[in-house]
Length: 258
Image (tube, rainbow, N blue to C red):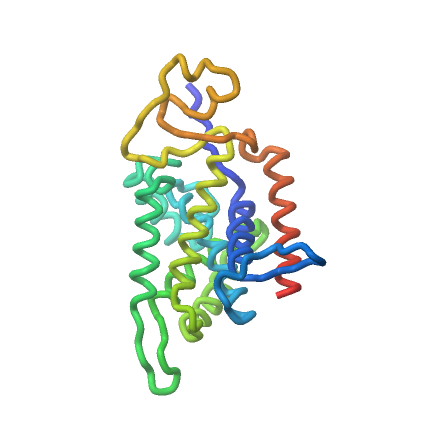
């Protein structure tokens, strides 16, 4: 008996979607007469870039429910152990961490981490909680680049995390917001594939058989309670790659023009 296929959007695609979402929110990018960003938060260039990589890492957080996801290979052996524990608590892949409850949990953790501050004589106010959480998130984003060795992930994550902790932007809502945006973008991305997500987990409201037999919309609500708008079809599809390529182009343009 074969085990069921596990639905994964590629880790790099999730990461680039997080970075793109953050840049769209924080960067008033204009190409000609076309406005490509909203500029909701006004941040310095380094703050925007730091937020982008944190948001990219946060866009991998929901996949902490599976020991074979990109996030599980980011900081071994710590990440392997954590993902196995979270997977059991969350009820397996695309359940607890891919729900409204999961979103609220990640927001709470980000807020809790960001609320821990210390004032040092030489450095001023630092945020060790945000720094530690940023180390994890940045390691996730870096590991989504497949050829990145674990040791280099640690080096980059530690350096960038220390930078986040010691350089607090004036807009203090940035860190919880970056985590929130990343997590939501991940779940939206998964809901654009056939597998979908159950936002109401642990409540499961399965689609009746007659609905599942309907043409087109029958695939949008499933017997296991998951909901999908599968315009990207299966994970790893050509449509997913095209969307990821467009987002990568947008990120490159936004960074250059920031």
